[in-house]
Length: 313
Length: 249
Image 1 (cartoon, rainbow over the protein chains, first blue to last red):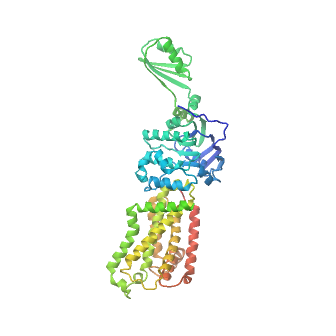
Image 2: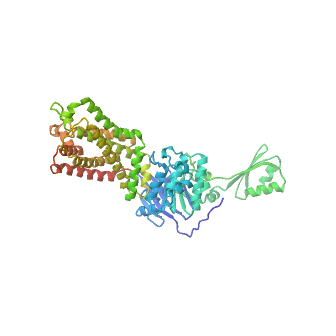
Image 3: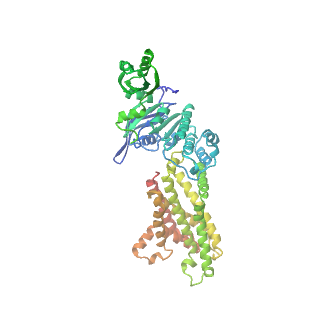
């Protein structure tokens, strides 16, 4: 996987410091701080109701936080909301359009609202909606609707794109197609700020994520680094008939436990070197292996470890 | 943002026309009612004889106008509620469109359809209902436009507070049709019990009826300055309050 390493010395595109938002007695967002840098895909991840959408809406100028400082592209999203809207693109969670509006009409309307729109017809083609140009919104599939919303978010050639729960409710195939589109947005040099409750999506798509739960940011970093930092455990599962294998693996310092069930061995240990050591051990003793796989912890495991609960509860 | 306004208005008009049932309901039904009334009642309407109640002989155009205006207000309330519930308002608001532009587009689209419906009703009604020579139709149309705008602002206030799209139509109906009952169209306001009289004077429709009836029967605008003033004040009041309490989602 190629990753664009962002230059942290650059000015952040989004700077959020200690933002807080309450609805009545409920604290939706509590002391949330993070920075998003140019050219990266940054994800706010957490379960539904964690405060992701509220945070995003505060940053995008759609909501006013009770406290805290937000700067987006050097602008104050509350005071300069109209200036900001020229430079950002937004896709909102669970938004709809008029049932009987045509794809090209929606794109045409949006294009007319901005000073420097891109070519709407080309955008429709690029997002694979060419044959749906004259279709009513209500007749589009979930994936097509989301692609239209991405088109609307890109119509003004924005520097920064907000995507809120973009693939919720889509089937895996449509989801993958959308991920490719989002990577395409980054390739065009834009910054993407997204929210998701799908850990797989965050892991595959985001350069950096902020884990958020109950309105608080728990940790921020690249997904792989968060996994390394919080879940260093590695597991190797193999099928090996050699009766001495268990003993030999237990001798590796990084190995914590070896579980033997018939010919299958489950080796658990800590550190990125674990797999290398296991393979070296196999080679050294010329042991024959008929199956070999590793299990790495995922962001899901990180989330469980940091919050004590599963993300989908 | 004028460009956005025209574009959005034009789109809303096209979108409305794509829903055959809605078009039939708002434009077709009033015309149908006039035709059926005309056929059943036939010549008495044409002669305006003393035996025909005043409502039919003199006030039918005004009654018809209000039925159309009220159905316009109701459909505005419904559409705003549906757009809000579907997240359409939220999405439109996250563009450089100013909030009032989004709402004005709906008012303009609704006004256009009201005008079309009125014209169609008028044409259909001419066969059965004799319009006396000298009825100032242009003045009447202006007065009607003015009252419709004022009533639409009341529609916005209702649309601001209805909780869901399901409630929009019934709540609107419950407020608007009884308002017609005490407006002086059926029974003179002066003959209502004092409490209802007070209610009548607090509602825009009473002034609207007085204005439209006066204009239809050839009285000048100057005789109805009070009505115009009352309707203007209410328009400003309703607009100001709904701007405060309007919910986008």
